[in-house]
Length: 152
Image (cartoon, rainbow, N blue to C red; front, side, top):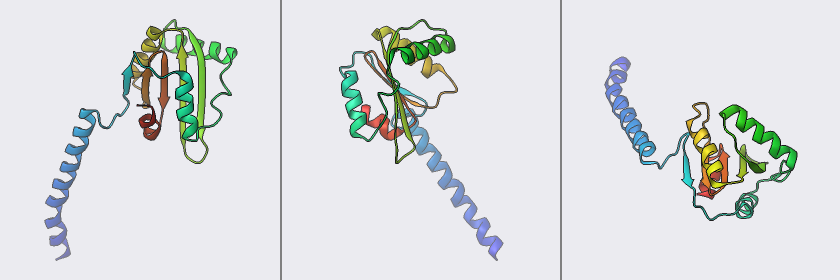
């Protein structure tokens, strides 16, 4: 008897799972659920000061610790080596929210075209599953959907 009840519930389970998968596919395809994707605003108006203020208000700490000339040069070298690009990094910020597992990285470039090139390289990187945002000459990368929504 129990087996008969379990077998009769099987079609209901299949229909439910199929409906959920269709709903998730619709969300992803509509852009409402950005997975391994980003948003591009190359003519963006947010400045680095505004972006850092947004992140600080959300509880991000240590954003300025990596912002120095040697770190900029180091990260510029990583980008150029890893992605085969020749870009000018003028600012590098990285921080986290202590009470959560949320981190973000903010890279400022010397030009909008440099930022767009790096943004495109990150989007094309199949191993990258972060949320990305391009705002003028600033590229923001985060693993947190909540953080992504703050910036967009």
